[in-house]
Amino acid sequence: MNETTDLDPSRLSDPDYEIPMAPRVALGMQHVLAMFASNVTPSIIVAGAAGFAFGGADMVFLIQMAMLFAGVATLFQTIGFGPVGARLPVMQGTSFAFVPIMIGIVKSSGMAALMGSVVVAGLFHAALGTIIGRIRHWFPPLVSGLVITTIGLYLIPVGIKYAAGGAADFQMNNPAWGDFSRWGLALVVIFVALGCKFYTRGLTSSAAVLIGLVAGYVVGIATGAVNFGGIGKAAWFAIPMPFKYGIEFNMTAIIGMCLISIVSAIETVGDISGIAKGGAGREATDKELAGGTYADGIGSAIAGVFGGLPNTSFSQNVGIVSMTGVMSRGVVTIGAIFLIICGFVPKIGAVVAAMPISVLGGGVILMFGMVVSAGINMLAGVNWSRRNMMILATSISVGLGLQAVPKSMQHLPDTLEMLAVSGLLPVAVLAVVMNLVLPEDAD
Image 1 (cartoon, rainbow, N blue to C red):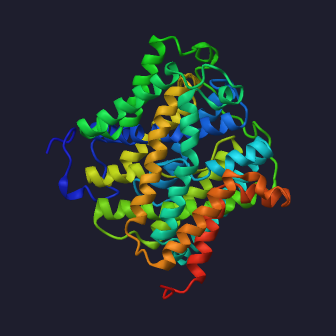
Image 2: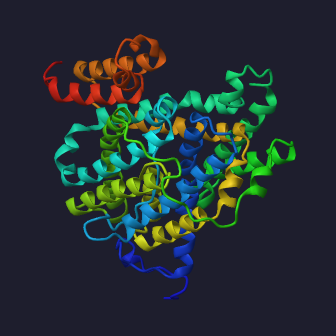
Image 3: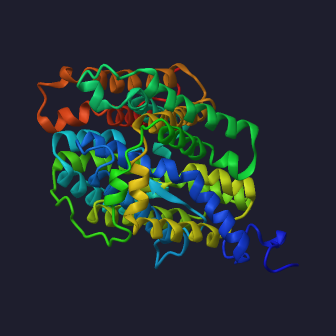
């Protein structure tokens, strides 16, 4: 066997297999390309909700932290320390699950409250590792599918606003909002991404959305839609300092983030189980599931200290492990090191932040649509008894209905009002509680 290029087929399912460096780097970059766009997008959305200028210094910083702490949290998973880490090829990234709650927090309480809730919820998330096996039954496919579908449905309007020119222009009634110059860039992203996904294979297909974003970015440069001012101002190297936005422990924010942490923990359990099954043809061990949950939470808590957002495992990378059959955690470790390097280079964050908002809109329409599709795919395997149909109907109607008409909750105390109109949280709580208390034979 050529030690520099060939792989040993008999060891591909071994997480400790140290594959040769050339294929290790190539496979590691495949993992990065598959998750890169999804990893930085929540930071851009939260920055917009906080009122930060699109492409400004604060957005660049949040993007930088997304890359840095995705890499750090991934190392917690792949290398681990003590009981922390699944020690499997688990790629971490900024979680979409928290976005609906984070938007509400930054709009009502500010960034300091958000960071305080990220730290506390991260520690709570880590603590779930001690009981994760005992609460898995709270989230059967009916509940998990409902929650994931709701995340996508909540976020799709954000994608449409971005594609049409951005929420700020929408609120200011900019007459150019929604014209073809905006939608044209979004459509470039969508068509190129779809073409790459369905008419190519391998790395190009895995990174279809990222390639679509690059294509839209290039067209944006050609049409004068890209402002390079922020790139010139950004430093080549910067070490993040803790508590950039301060820290505040707001009970409303903490409750909301901790409840969503339970959802995120269960998602990580599913991803780790998928990696073990798809890459090694076995079930994940209790030690791997607990270690993965510890890494999730500790990675999120540390990110919050430095102004980053909560992390979780990335499902698209589970698909890569299943597709390639390579279980080597060293592969994903290479991807993590690359992300950490990017996190210390603000110029990279500035390049991402300079992307026209309509280009991002095209990408997130696809991303959020895929979130909905993933949820529906989970729901497809549910036995649609009258009981289960009632759980879905009640949860999604109440949760999304309250989010669509927030004034309906205006007489509640501020804490309960913010949680009630968050969209995702009522759906998750109602689905979990109804699934636990309604008798199975209520058909």
